[in-house]
Length: 332
Image (tube, rainbow, N blue to C red; front, side, top):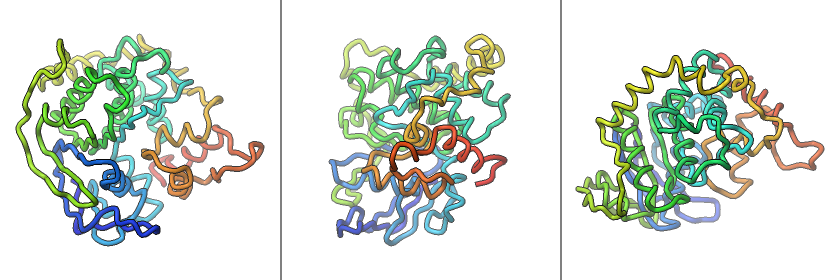
């Protein structure tokens, strides 16, 4: 459950980003968050990710009171979330399998679990044939499906999708929302931020409109169902999603062996990764100026990632070792 009670956020510049906002999203809900640029959508996301703190009011996400959450507990809290970026944030040097497995590898999930879970979510998003492909071999829609699978792989209670259709062709936007709807039908709470009003009108459901830091509309509307895009035949009904899940579960024991060499997949190729690659892959950090991004992340990592002369920068191996040490055995 997500709940904001009389929440306000005022930045040090004096800008009031949110003003006395109250909002409740129950487990299993699907909600669109809409609003113009600067309306407060990004600030709300940062609050829900514990990237920033409320100036006043109470923020609760997945049973965690974020006002009282200690820094050492933030990694544990973030494991209950999945985040889908507008710009995919896939690691170029990793295959589809490796991009998804990396999330579990960093939190020190058992290898046996990784071998079963990753093929399952790959099948769920319909990318069985692309398991060993690299990001530059994928279409925009396929990249976003990988990003959704990565957000889903840790079985989060809540997935936040920040403009997930912003960098793909219009006809694929409907496909991505259908996929998120199908995931929601299986019980995962979805909060999708978008500026694409045609999508919202088409699908309907709960619409939360933020204007100048205030919620001015929060209602459930009936979708038009208009066939806005010709020849759109990729609709995923609840029955189709259930069938996909059943098929993925039936195949997961054999797919891991057929689709990848899992021993190689566990030894992920990080030698060409930068610190930013690693942080982007698992941090759940929306777009923001570099200093604003790095500050909350480095507080939870025992490696100084402040920009330095190149010779002093931490290597990817150091970053991964630090992150793994932080999460090994469930410790922060």
